[in-house]
Image (cartoon, rainbow, N blue to C red):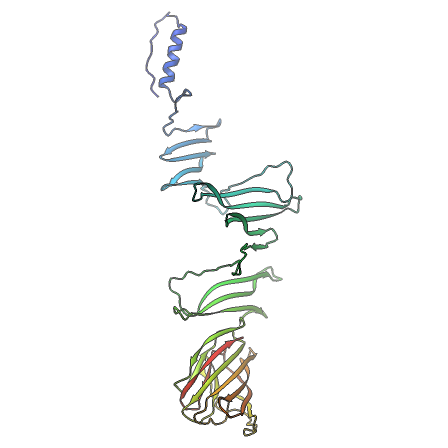
Length: 413
């Protein structure tokens, strides 16, 4: 600070009231760091405004367009522009794992009561008429203020249709409530879990919900889960399913959600049509309609695992309603669905599969098949088959003949 010399006094000269007033005026005009009249602004020019006796609490603006609030010798709070956006920061340079910094909203009420609101973050904006609107808030409400049994809830409120509504709420009992106030017939509320993959692929596992609890060793265990799987990510023909998993005898075991219907495929060529079985399947239905071949060999099914389709070990019996097919004992290369086909006839049917024993990968199955013309004969069979590993494929075979009509589908129940 520079102050212009007003007057130099000589020895023995008397300091008059006029001299004193003129000197104070000079200090006022030139000593802005010491005194500022009410009609002027004070310019600290990056210097600290010290607020306590040991000089470790201050306000300063030594960085352009930034105000620092110093507590205990450190700049803990800052107001600045992040680009052109106002930014208020609480900073703590501690390198440990302790929680911090804090932002506390403290309602210091002398008479706290249940259902009191104690703090709220508000998100304001303007509407099309230039009015300031409260578009969203996050608020804390006291559910129980009884000492020792306190409960609270957090509310997320959004403006909906011009009205502030409690859309999402978390209660202290770990309950989450998601509300939709629509009066129409559309679905709601909708909880969306979006996996935004840059390279989606068939068989990708998507969002998952885990249901965790403790065991008797105080370990956190996922006792059940639900996850989504993308079976086909091709645009326009997407397929997917849910997998329900549960803990069985200490091992996480998958089972599919009911009612997963896979798109039917044509059986108009080839000697076999193989269906891929999703992991975790326990109950399946294979259906076919209008199936025909260029020969007369019986239709059959083959089961397979990662090692391929198996052509032995099928146990079961087939029969027909007109008694032309009698008890045939064990199957041979496959599980036979019919007797010899009749040329130019088409056949439709259903085959049910149930996992009997997961330890031996044993499946039980049965079928009903009929001709799509005046023949009133129904063919039926029942049997079982054990595999070396988990079932991964089922094939409809024509005994070496070639398929030339119909379609086949898969339902996972």
